[in-house]
Image 1 (cartoon, rainbow over the protein chains, first blue to last red):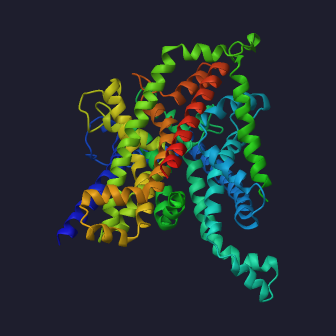
Image 2: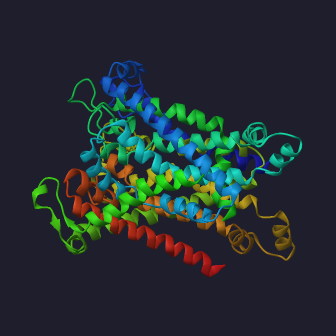
Image 3: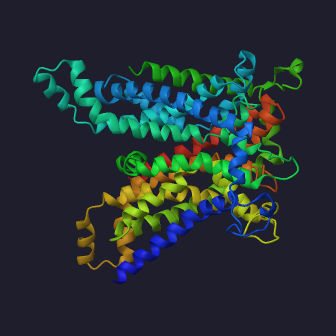
Length: 272
Length: 267
């Protein structure tokens, strides 16, 4: 009984600490403009006007389109390239696979700001500044090491004997890959896709450095430049609503695939 | 099959990085492109003799040490609690992922608004982000909120691998709870501790988003990433900004090497 009370106490404390900032943003997003300065934790008279305003604000809608497009394309490219690389590393054990993995790990420690200078000047020369492609390229490169790392960890847990036994039973190599290996590897690919997408979706430094207009600004960058319907009042409510619109979907996705994400995130910790 | 990955990483990361190193040796400002010239180590000299560099380095170190230190203590406590928990572990494992999934920009805004006078519910009339020590506190609090779950989950993954018999044996030998923690738990979990601390320290050292959203580097909270950004994008001083990036990279590499050495030395 004592243990149960202690567990309950820990759980409640952590839940409150974790959810309080979220509840606060929800509450701010529900406050009408006239009451956004009331300093209360909960809204006195909740309204949805911040949300309806958001979808008539082209700054938000184009940023949302940019975010979805850029993140999806970059993630897809990154994961496809990573699947091949990780398969080679985990399965074929070619010479130099340690070098690929080492390079990937080294690059994850790299300060992204060190890429901003050359990309900024190069993109200006090539006409890639403030375009989708101008963000997709760096997004692929910074998310690729993470994707390779996660995919390799997953591929190493696959019992490759399955492939050989399938071939012994008369399946071709391609059939073995399609029927046996891919179904086993699919959860790993999905998790990698999700974590990679999360990294691109929330990226901020490249997004503010390599864009200058609505043309390619993603939501995190747009939030920093957000102005409401009137320029003279800081649109706290609108920022809060926009922040939630891009946060809630990914939080739900993460919670749904919670078990696999924890396995992916901690794959580095156990092997040391 | 690994060739495309290798090619991409080299083309889009290694090559630009070498370019950064080259640009850092130039006197190159986009606002005066005509005066572009090779300058040797001038940029480094200017930076390392400026007060700004040393102040920003100190700010970065203070923010890194306090946030990673707090995250580690809280994360370890949380991991231990989750490990021993009979009830609600699954719920906690789920809920701690929420801060991880929240965008850094969003958590930075959430805490900024919470402490902002006349908007937030925390601070009353005191301008938290207007004074150095309080601005540090808000930035650290934001970072701790966002990343303690990651720390806890990494450490929990390590704790799970400790065989229960080791504890039993220590108990039978008369080791108290404190002794068991220091003599059994910590050594067994050390690989997880090193990896978690390494990842988080390098991350914290490059902190940018939270500073950008909350203070724009004002009141002494400018970090090295922000300094580099300010030179490159705001002042268009490509040479100076690149030199700061290179120095930041050197700091990060030194931290990583330090961790690797500490890890090898002990084991």
